Image (tube, rainbow over all chains, first blue to last red; front, side, top):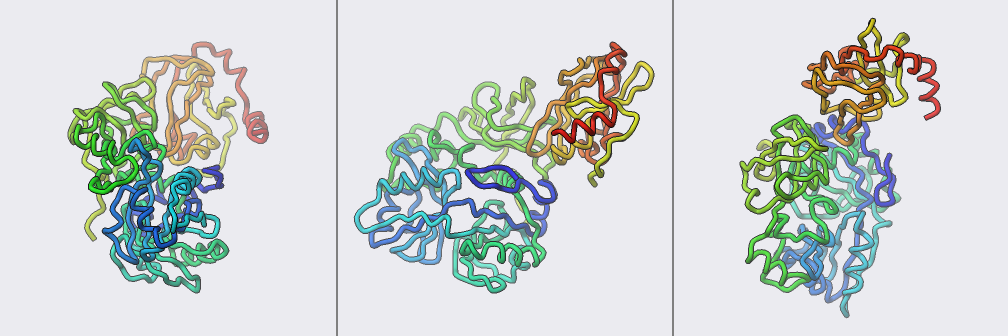
Length: 331
Length: 131
């Protein structure tokens, strides 16, 4: 167990690599109860979130969800999150554990008349069940990604969210905290492998989902991070002017994905020779190679460009590749 | 498959969780069961060059698991005669057989008297118990 944002978290159960492969080939369950949940309610809830979040909430209806960014005035990323629309007057937003307080304070300060933000993180547990056989093992029908509905699993009432952080089919199940252990046991009894934070990181990096604090931060902008698709630049929200400017001028650096061509494992903070740095790196269990993401000068950002990573003083060759690094085979 | 916990008799141990098998004026070096267990499944061995040297108590390479990097500390000084290519190609060999196929390098001892400063198996187990 390791401390993480005030939580004691399992890095691994059986081992990072077997857990990773279980999620890629069958199903795994992650306890991600450390993530924060805020209720945003009131007649102006939609208006408030439209002014704080980068993506356009008009694109989703009741029962749908959206990946979006909480941006500061400089266009930097306070947090990346998923907004679940219950109805026009009620959204649930799920934020990163490490940003729970910063995101809450940021939003609370900008509350407007007719909307209220409430941090309900301690009331809920969140279990992510991910993998090609996840739904089959849970006895759930497939639904459109980024939708949600209330449901029940083995007697526990859950909010079934068709979202995840692994690039695989799956759900994130939210339940009252007191039901968490019962729900966990029920999921494991259905043959789903327990998986820890270690596998969660290798899985998300193979599919190039950014990790806030590493790949995206309050100092980095969405356009440079390749998250322009989450920014509705035709609406007004915090930092939109700066994002429009970066988009117009073109980013100086871009967040790219790369694969090592030599035996070496890139790690967060390693310099890229000629400019830039690694923001996330690991050993890919599926490719059996070092993989990573990092910011490099825009001129070095196209797929096929050779990079050299300074691995503790040794230069190692890598190649920029299209995202995602690992693509799941068509089912 | 990971090996089960074991610290063979007859090896010499270093406090940084390395072992040495002394054969005349040569020694084979590796990391102990404790070290590989703490790291988890190894995915990379940053090996030194053959013909290079090890210096007692100094790092001569790195082993990495998915989540962690660790220096490998030389229990003895010497010239590196051979690097275990099997571990370079399949680092998990260290997890499977830390004292056998998972050896890391073979050296020619620069100063055989250094061996006297290493721990025997009982002293190393005592050291582990104090961790």
